[in-house]
Amino acid sequence: MKKRVAILISGSGSNMVRLVESMGEDHPAEPVLVVSNVPGAVGLEKAAALGVETAVVDHKAYPDRESFEAALLEALQAARPDIICLAGFMRILTAGFTKAWEGRMLNIHPSLLPKYRGLHTHARAIEAGDAVAGCTVHEVTAELDGGPILGQAIVPIRGNDTPDDLAARVLPMEHQLYPAVLRRFAEGERSKLLLE
Ligand code: GRF
Image (cartoon, rainbow, N blue to C red; front, top):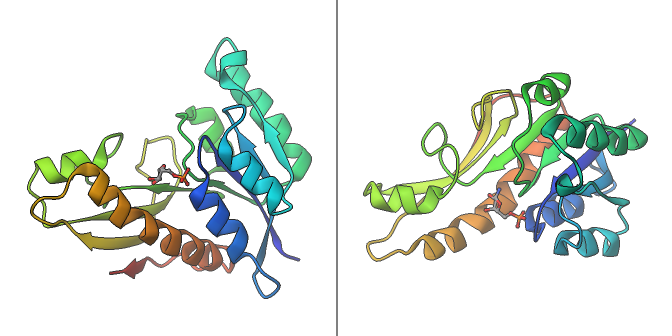
């Protein structure tokens, strides 16, 4: 039986597209649902075009994180996912939600964790004068961007890089790293993958 994968997005969904496209016939997993917390997110159209069921759970429609997550859980349960992939999902999840999915939920973060948890990762790496940057796929735990690392991809930072230049260099590596890590994770492999 293939592992059932639900993917949570908030925007363009470029990582979601690569994950869905990577799950072919020979793959140990299959995409069963794409959920966005943002109504009208462009990624929803891309998911539908790829033939994946979509749902919207608008966080603005709920008074607090807990009620939003209860609605999110309801949408997810209908699809019976074995694995959840956060892919450009911009909501912080409570410890209650992450605990319920611990060991079954992945995220991609655009920095070489544990450096630069949180936002504005590329600007911070440039500001710090780092020689390299990159992205990390990790298991999601209650600690923001803090779970076990499953894979990283490294790119150089060049002298006159702007944060956008760096983002443009990192994003294609995200698109390579996340599908590779998902396949390994679905096969039960937990050792760290390094792309450079
Ligand atoms: C990417 O930089 C990803 O690392 C971050 O959100 C950005 C957009 O991702 N989490 P996507 O195009 O929506 O997948």
